[in-house]
Length: 84
View 1 (cartoon, rainbow, N blue to C red):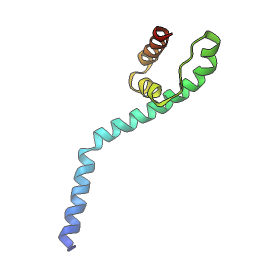
View 2 (view 1 turned 90 degrees about the vertical axis):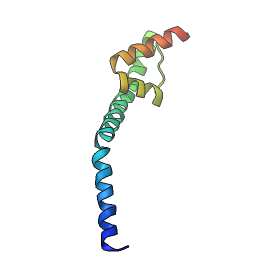
View 3 (view 1 turned 180 degrees about the vertical axis):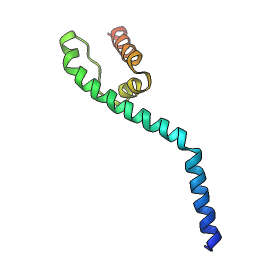
């Protein structure tokens, strides 16, 4: 590949990163919040068993908590209540 080919490839990579900056930061924020949701579910597992509430510690529940926050936790509790 000649010199202009390398510059064109580097330019395309930079352009792609600039255009994808906002979606990548949003995805990173969702992943971080879901990790915090996973920790919260793990901590709630001990307290919830005393109250008779059993939420699974899994990726789906953590993504619900990561995307929706406290309303997502209420949604998980209502779903668990409706199923049982």
